[in-house]
Image (cartoon, rainbow, N blue to C red; front, top):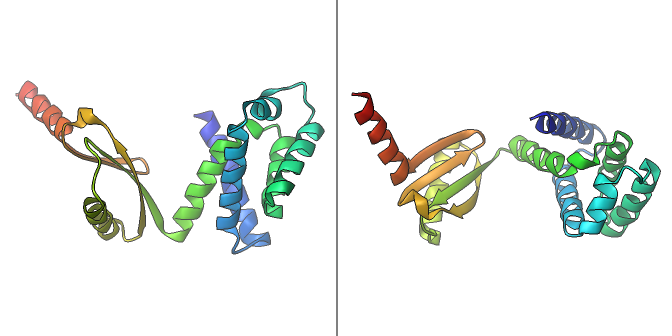
Length: 183
């Protein structure tokens, strides 16, 4: 939980800084950080070298990341932010900070991220109907990510942030069982 608190503090600080020094580039910086995380995660040796090796100095980490970020043509604000994380020895939080920053940018833009879990894959019509219902319920643009879990038996479990709406058959059966046990 401490990691998430740290990540949120840095992500909020970055969002505030971007609003002042690079207003309008919030989405570009979000994409840049996500691309950098993906590049690092895709290379185990690099991840070990930069993120977890205390024998590598901060300056060496900054130089390595600087070359990578330059090659990837990351926004100057994103590059400076990663340098700050290196200075503060928080590079191990980069992936989580990137995720939280992305959530904050989406929230600021009025985008709602919803995770839909169903027993079987949904067709495009069903996804469109869910998207429409969620848009009406939240009042914002909805971005849906889908998962399947055969244990649900049927129905839909929707997660929006920390709120879970369990409309699955498995959830309904569990509620009926609790009701019967309590009487």
